[in-house]
Amino acid sequence: MHWALVSLVGNDPAPGAMGARVFLRRFAASTPAPRVFLVRDHSPEEPLRRSRLEALQGWLHGLGFRVEWVDLGFVEGHQEPLVLNLTGGDKATFFRLYRLASARGWPGFLIEAHGAQPVLVELSGRVGPLLKEEGLSLEPTFRTPLPWP
Image (cartoon, rainbow, N blue to C red; front, side, top):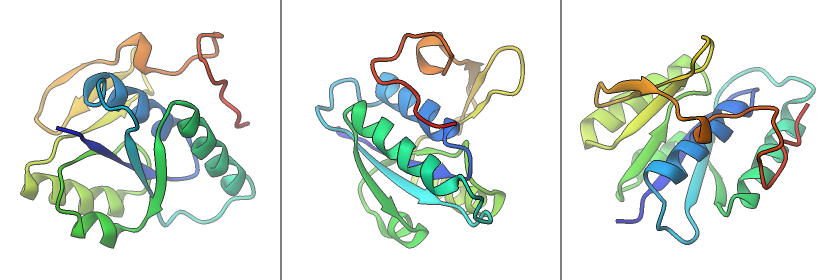
């Protein structure tokens, strides 16, 4: 099965980047050109938001993703299975997509990265450490560097 990723995006591009790495490793290892649908939340526009989101899009292209910006209606009307990265974005959008994933049986996750060890929380209830390969760091281990401030 070829999965596509839906990723909530707020002002910080890091949750979208980490979610993409989780998706590639766990769901799309054999998919030649995976798709990611980015959903902007309703956060107020900050001066750096546009450049950060453009940088995220470019970074995702560098990982081999086909990137599309979509609205919630697109996701709600989508019939093929999706994987939801609910890490970024606002709470209202999170809850709408969480209910949708639950109703359709779609897998999803969020990443809690504020502690000493980042944790991956799956919608199935499974909780475990985020693998080093799935996280972000300042070490020069990326093929494509992180371009945002």
